[in-house]
Length: 154
Image (cartoon, rainbow, N blue to C red):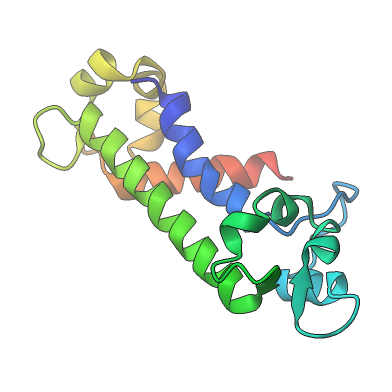
């Protein structure tokens, strides 16, 4: 297992948070999701039609998946449910990948396990093992991923 796959799974969390993101200059902070939803809701009915969703490319791309009741409108509740489901799926994928690397099943990854199953993770082992106990926990891996995402967004 390679760390890019694990990082991609964990990093997908960031992508979901940006589901409402519009094209903007990198220096301009993104508007909160509620504000983007409201701005796209051109008729002010509190829902997004397929046409209104085109202003938010990620929503437009996943419109049918998000529209749980298939009424042709996206509500804030449907969006919240879709994001919650996506978060849960990402957590499950990340946990499965972690378990695959953690071959002895002790809930933490040793350097030997990383070297055998995730060489790129092994290369960054010392950086990720925050408490320097010789193991990487899921929490340490998430913290390292968050740190990398924050550093790359600056």
